[in-house]
Image (cartoon, rainbow, N blue to C red):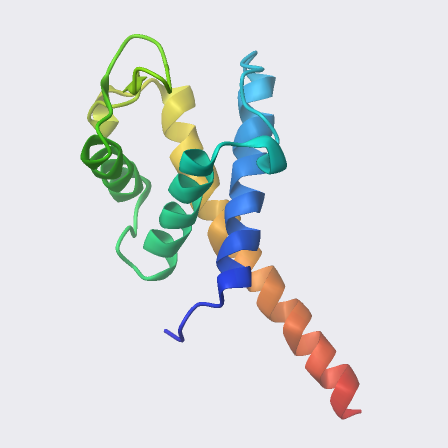
Length: 134
C-alpha cells in the first residue's frame, strides 16, 4: 500500500469519529463532542484506528477492538463501569465477545467508514484527474 497522506488519515479519522458520535447519539449517549472540540487523545485514537485498518493490522472488527484495547492499556487506561477520561477508565476495555451488540457495532461502523471513505476519496481524486486530463 502507498504511504498514507496525513490529510487522508485526518479526513478518515474525522469521518469515523462523526459517524461514531451520531451512532452514540442515536443510542441516547450525547456525551460525544464534535471532532473540532474533541480532546487530542480522542483524535489520536481515531487516527491510530484509521492507520491500523488501512495498513492491514486490523482486518476484522474483532482485531480493531483488540488493538484499540491494547493502545488504551498502553496509555494507562483500565476497565471501569463508566467512561472517565480523567480517571482513564472505560467500560469497553473487555474482550470483543464480552461487548454488548451495540458496542460491537461501533467497530463495524468504524471499519466501514474508513474503507468506504477511502474508496470515495480515491474515486473523487480519479474524477479530478480525469477532468484535468480532458
